[in-house]
Amino acid sequence: MSKSKTISADEARPVKRKREAKGRMRNFLMFLPNMVVLLGRLLKDARVPTAEKALFLAAIVYVISPIDLIPDIFPFIGQVDDIYVVALSLLRLVNRTDEEVVRRHWTGGGDIVSLADSIATIAPMLLPKRVSRVLTSRVELAESGKLLGNIANRNAPVMVELPEPDSRPVVESGSRMPS
Image 1 (cartoon, rainbow, N blue to C red):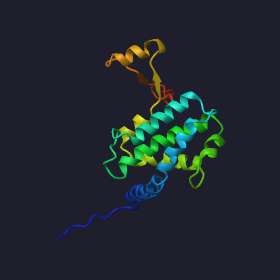
Image 2 (image 1 turned 90 degrees about the vertical axis):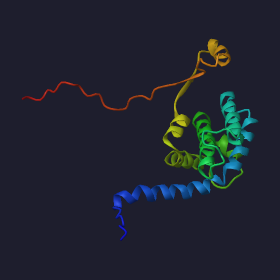
Image 3 (image 1 turned 180 degrees about the horizontal axis):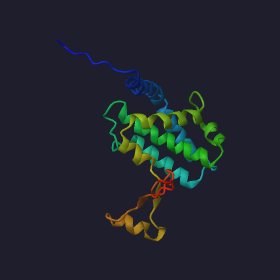
Image 4 (image 1 turned 90 degrees about the horizontal axis):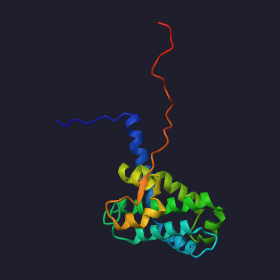
């Protein structure tokens, strides 16, 4: 006799949500080539700050490079980290400039800003938690005077991860309730 496991509605929700997210992400992955072309066009736009252009160039190299956090030889999940990096780069530009700069260069279907936002929302659900943390961590470059020396010295940090601000409420250890 085989035993069948009954799954409660609460247990089925996350599975269903993840399955739906995978389906949406499969559709989003079709936009990846157009998004990389968009980054290339934004590299040529004088309204885009130099720092953003450097990030776009890094994102393009990340997408076409065979060396990734999740190699592209793994179907689906290997491309999710690529599109996530591109979406985060675009959203950073949208937050620092006028979103019309991005929209003007977009030749794909739909609204690129809402597409990038949807990708940035869904991708962390599909990626391993460590990969997601690496891609979304707040980092700071080493001091400018030490940066080149740190690059030459492979043991010195070039970037440092900044701790996330603690959003938990502060609770005092002593109780004021009468005994």
